[in-house]
Image (tube, rainbow, N blue to C red; front, side):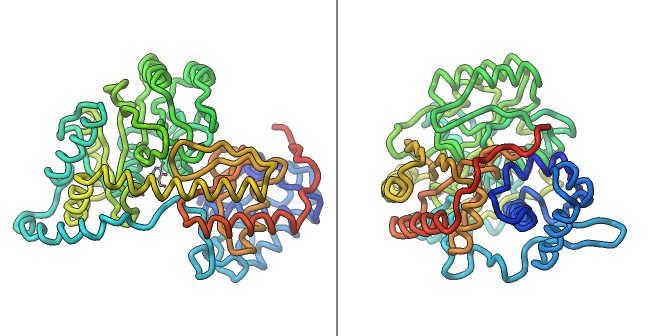
Amino acid sequence: MASITSVRLARLLGSWRHGGPAYAELAERLRLLSIDGRLPDGTRLPAERDLALTLGLSRTTVAAAYGRLRDLGALMSVRGSGSYVALPGGPALPAPDASGFLDLTKAAMPAAGVVEECYGRAAAQIGAELGGSGYELLGLPRLRVAVAEHFTRRGAATDPEQVLITTGVQHGLSLLARALVSPGDRAAVEQPTYPHAMDTLLAAKARLVGIPVSPDGWDLEAAEEAFAAASPTVAYVMPDFQNPTGASLAPEGRERLARLAERHGTLLVADETTALLDIRRGPLAPLAAWSPTSVTLGGLSKLAWGGLRIGWIRAPRSVLARLAQARPALDLGTPVFEQLVAAELLAREDLLVAERRTRLAAGLDALTGALAEGFPEWRVTEPDGGMAVWADCSPLSSSRLVVAAHARRVALTAGPRFGFDGAFEHRLRLPFTASPDDLSDAVAALRAASTSWSAGPADAPLITV
Ligand SMILES: Cc1ncc(COP(=O)(O)O)c(C=O)c1O
C-alpha cells in the first residue's frame, strides 16, 4: 500500500484553517482529499505525531481529527501498522449520482441526438463482422480509415496505419504511459490539468513538471524554463479548450511548443478530447500539423457520448508499433459493435459539432449569467468553447465550498484536484454541460453554501517547505 509523508500531505492540505475547531477542519479537508482521489483508497497516513509536528499542531488535535474520520468510516487504524484512508461508504457523504444530487464533477453531456440512429445503423452491419475472429488489436479497418480522414480534413494529413483505436481516451492514455513512460521519467503536464492524466502518469511512476496555463493562455516562457531544467520524456497538453481552463493555444504557440519539444527530444502528447467543442473560436489545425512526431489522443466521449467508450491514438508508425506491442498486456481490442457506431458517427461529425455548440452555448450563457448575479466578485473568464469555466473564487476556499455544496446536494470538484501539491485553492471548475435550469439551481445552492459559513481569515500558508 502507498503511504504519504507528512510534508507531502501538508502540501496537499493547502490552507485548510478557517477559524473553526482545528481537528474538525483537518478531518474535513482530509475527507475531501480522499473523496476526490488525491488521497487514494488505502493510502497510509503519517503517524499522528509526525503530522502534528509538520503542521504545528498538538498531537491531540491530529488524534481527534483521525478519530473523527474513523467514526465516519473514512479511516481504518490497524494497531502497530498505522492509519489507512478508506473510501466513503458511510451515510455522511452520499454518492453524487444518488437521486436529487446535481453532479457537476463530470463535464459530460447526454448522448447527442444522432447517436441512437447510429446504433441502429451499426446493428444492420454487425452481421457482416461475425464471421471474423473479432480481435482487432489496432481497430476495425473501416474506423481507422474514418479517423485518418478526420485528421486529414482538419489539416494533419494522416494514413490509416498511423491510427490505433482505443476504448476511450483514458484507455489510450494508460496504454501510452505503459508503453512509453518508465519509472523516474519526467512528464510535463499543464498546471492545472485533467486529473486522471496526472493519476495515470503518477501510476507509471513519472515525476511531474508543470507548464502553467490559465484562462488567458499558456506561459510558454515558464514552459521553456521547465523543459531546460527537466528535459521531460513526455509532455501532455490539451491545445484546444483545455480542461479545466478552457484556453486554446494559438497557432504561434503550437509552433513554439512543437519546436521546444523537438529541441529537448520530448514526446509531445496532445489530448484532443475537447477539441471539437467549439462555441465561437473557429477551427484550428491539430498540434500534429506542427509536430509530425507528436502523438494525438482523441475520441467521441464529449462530441457524441461517453457511454460509447471509443477513442483513438494517432502517432508516427514507429510509436504506433510500440503501442501495439504493449497493448495485449492491457486488453486485446475494442468492442467491434461500438467501432461500427463510431464510424457512422464520424460520418456525421458536422452535425455533432453543431448540436454540441448549441447546447454548450446555452449552458455557458446560463452559468455565466447566474455567476454574475450570485458571485459578482469572482473573476470568470468566458472560454470560447469546451465544457467548463475555471472561476477564480477568491477569497473563498474552493475545497470548503465543495464540502458545503455537497451538504446542499451539489457535487463539485475542488480546484486543487486539477493541480499537484495543493495549488488552485481559490479556483473552482464549473462545467456548463448541465441544463440551464440545473446550472442556475447549482449556483443558487453554491451561493447559499457560501453564506452559511464565514470565509474565515485570509488563507496564509501554515508552513513553508
Ligand atoms: C481532457 C480529457 N481527456 C480524457 C478524458 C477521458 O475521455 P474518455 O471518456 O474518452 O476516456 C476526459 C474526460 O473528461 C478529458 O476531459
